[in-house]
Length: 308
Image 1 (cartoon, one colour):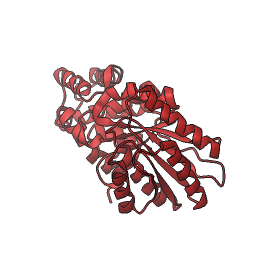
Image 2 (cartoon, helix red, strand yellow; image 1 turned 45 degrees about the horizontal axis):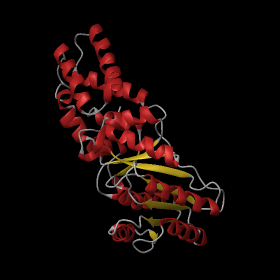
Image 3 (cartoon, one colour; image 1 turned 180 degrees about the vertical axis):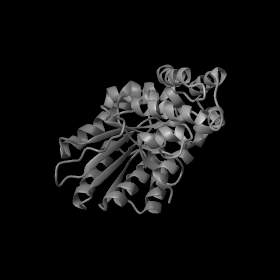
Image 4 (cartoon, one colour; image 1 turned 135 degrees about the horizontal axis):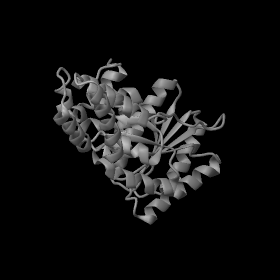
């Protein structure tokens, strides 16, 4: 099994390769002023944004002014250190329900972000890591193929599922899922919701209804309101997250598809803007590719570094 550092390095190959290939190609040689300009351009290309790029480049320039023998790998190490400082506080965990009640993790976001597969993978991980049962609540009753998709994943990963029919009331399904989790002694209830455009008030209102229904069971539920963001969309995800945060009160983020994009730097911009913890990131298709976010592993992976 790959270590977490190797997982992040493998998953972020496209960011470290296509976006920062110029830097990793310089690991064994001295850099010059032109190389630093290239680094700056490629950081922008990886969607790190103005502020993060500026801080990383300023730190590299400062060291270069003192040491004209600076090599590419040393510049990468500087970049990783700056990135770690920027992301300080970004790691987080789940809040738990009062003793005897299931802890509810409600996943929200737009269509195509990967909520359904993330919900199943997360339920599987919670069972494996904590040794306590998890139940999936299939509350995406709007999309015709959603039930079939989540049922397939639940069977594959040996996770219990509570579902209803296409077009059913999503809040009623959430009610049933909580009751089932309570009755079966499940520690975790992972609720998958329908993808919705953050600009559609009626769909956002459905999320509020799910929250109200859960609160009737447990005034503290859902303890975790997590937005699932498609990492390949880069900085465009920020406006999505802002709208969901305003409507639903987010407690954290899961960022998917970081393995399929050279835009992995957007994660830093999203965190800078929202200051919401990043709980997990998606680094591939397999269940084990949903990894707890680790600042050092991410920063090293972005810059193509091995464990420090």
